[in-house]
Image 1 (cartoon, rainbow, N blue to C red):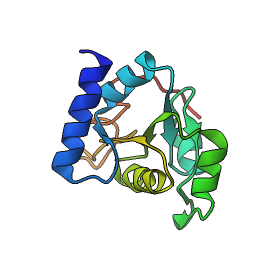
Image 2 (tube, one colour; image 1 turned 120 degrees about the vertical axis):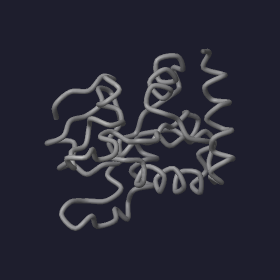
Image 3 (spheres, rainbow, N blue to C red; image 1 turned 90 degrees about the horizontal axis):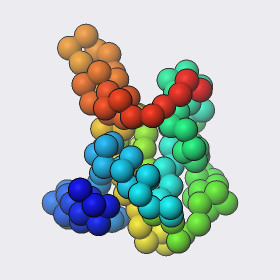
Image 4 (cartoon, one colour; image 1 turned 90 degrees about the vertical axis):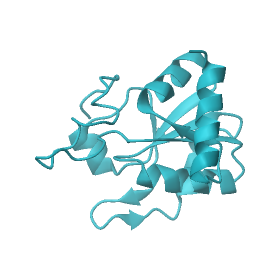
Length: 149
């Protein structure tokens, strides 16, 4: 599948979901886009504690949307994003399960980023029957590159 086909699918998915930004990608689609488009940047919006204890995607830009403990909103999120990622980039946001990255994608689109995508399922994905993450879906479950933080 070409990167153009992947992005068209993500945009169609975004329309179906009523997103206010470019679209939504599965983790394997996001990895394919990242590998194929030099201007694509993965932005991990999880907390620093998650980066340290759960793991990170190599070369992903890290900008906390909410800080641990208490998941306090980062009032400087947009300015920190702008310092690290140009508005000319294709930005792929990821969090633990896809909710905070959706919020980050909305904020980026409002701030003038034109190519913004949410990575569905997130880094760890949904909980399994035993209430563990990282097995059902998500970046890790798909076997995509990551390292311990």
